[in-house]
Length: 487
Ligand code: BG6
Image 1 (cartoon, rainbow, N blue to C red):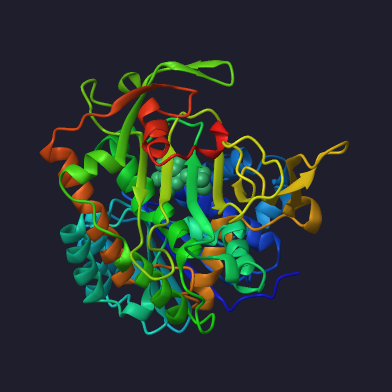
Image 2 (cartoon, rainbow, N blue to C red):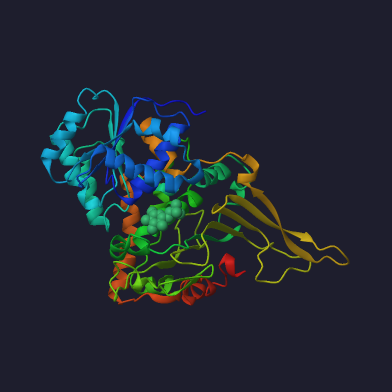
């Protein structure tokens, strides 16, 4: 059983929103059931709706029943729900925070986590009002949900305004991909073993692919998504963070800043894409009606809350290059999209060919040595090696050394938000983005958006349930490679 954490107050802004109800409350319930949350901790939803505590608890219960499925236990819920509270807070209304301060009186010496799960345009007002009401204590910390801003300037402004109230050590910029067990495993694979390190470089790796494919469409988030698009929603954060972990130098320790310093170096070494290069090295896509696993689904333009003339991308593929000694000349192909053929998050490292083949070789499109690290839906590590095909002659064939991590450990892994929420209570910043990382990520993303605007690059249509527009295959094909699912 996990060790019990110090008592905390968790204040969830955007308390009736999707993230809080679908992810945060179920995550907190699971940690409570696991024995990590003390009985005198408090979890308070804050939102603009006029709800009673009972209404809120009922909403929270319905959501947890739905999202926890068979794991939901009415008796445990009854105990957990005693920790729940609700407060009506309009982000810009200073008087609402006075009420909140009143409700928290006497709890100033308790760890206080403010989780901002609202549009990032409200972060500054919320921080200021918290400070004015005297709610920011030395034991306070603030969690900022992504996307933080929509470009480098807006992110910078929010960071400055939140930074005027909270110190950098109190700011937890969340990217839930960093909290996934499988992403931690990637760190373990790279920095807990000597095996791959000597091979992890130019001359021995041909290219790296990072795919985050989703079957889902925009769901109930049409309004947000149409203003955001896949590049800002997924690439700027999740895919670039995965790229950092794949490409970073071994940190000197697992101290938060040691890890974040190394990730920052990768982001700063990304070769900028400018002007026409943007067109040559990126692909934008948008899904049209199709079917996913045999179920018909509408096109993006027919989804609720989407402008019928929208040119927002729901798919991005791009080629990134890292200008360092280790990675010069090794392309990193990134790809993400909604309504793709299957849910799949996968990192594929293709190693170089042997310098001098002495046996009959396999068909050219089949790479001999591939390391496939699958993060979702299941967690596995597969290494492809060539073995001799039985029979006469030395005909080699790719075979797999496969490790299914779920099967091996047989312990259910923590959901990303469970781990990250507990880390905020513990005060561990390792899995959160530092301000300079976020800044570097936006600095690389902004010129791509500018390039698309400059050349009026419209998204290419792809059929829902496919692997995205054909141009994505052409992007990697021009370098003589293929996406892993096309092998
Ligand atoms: C979120 C994006 O950050 O990540 C969503 O805003 C996306 O659009 C989600 O669906 C994917 O997360 P996961 O954990 O389901 O892969």
